[in-house]
Image (tube, rainbow, N blue to C red; front, side):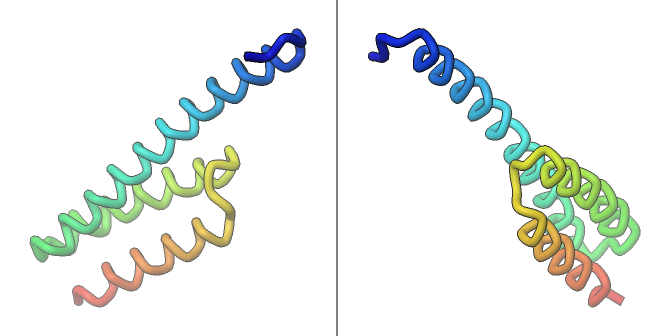
Length: 87
């Protein structure tokens, strides 16, 4: 265990940030899963709506630094391709 006050604070801050990041990643995964479910069911309108929501959540995660911007762009691109191929 840390003895220095600043080290103790860093431990607490790191735990708080890890919990926040975990919650955001979980939320993103949920929205992405909704897109996959809609695509598998063949419902184009539901897939488009789910894609819009997933895109917003991915962008929020990138802006908070949870995901790198290139990772976010790649995920959005792949989801969009998947939805567009449904036509």
